[in-house]
Image (cartoon, rainbow, N blue to C red; front, side, top):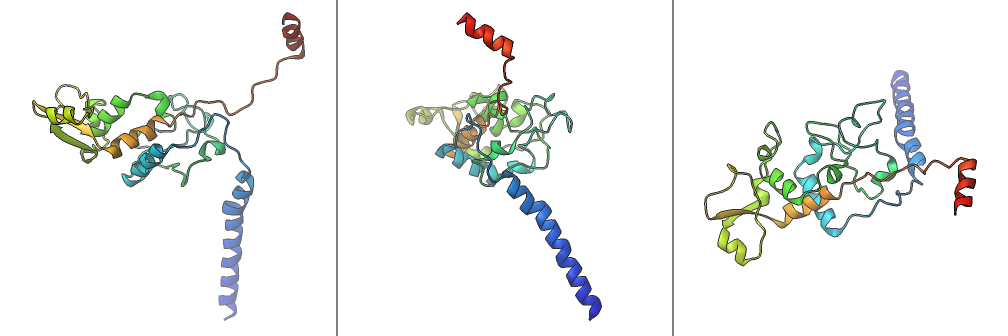
Length: 211
């Protein structure tokens, strides 16, 4: 019995230390974080697109957390500066991700702002990146007769040759696909997160005299 009490006590102490180190202390550190001034809340369409992103498991292959240059070459890959806690102020839940089967998407809206590219890439990734292993998402699109699509005022995809449907038919995005692309286009964290460096005193006085 004595050994069981010691074991249980040791387990509770270990759990308490782990909880303090991994939950309480990080919470105390970031609880007062404010969003960067240029970070905007998600629109209703982007929030719907975020739900499509989660529902389709995009987070399992794409991260949203570029690392510091001392921890990895993410900056050299064109993924942008290292993220900071304030970048995720409006994220509920956070979609940091831990796998990079595909590229980090923290700044995909800045790297690739084209709506047409995103839609076509979702429909058939190999049409835009031949070696891509990303799955296609045809169920986010509908194949229609071209005349019907025109009558309904829908904008079909401008797919590359070899990936278009039969003559007389076009591929049109569903509302879910459009919302998902709006979410991807909104992922642009290229704003600065550090205050500008103060000017030297001599330079400041020179600027004042010049004015």
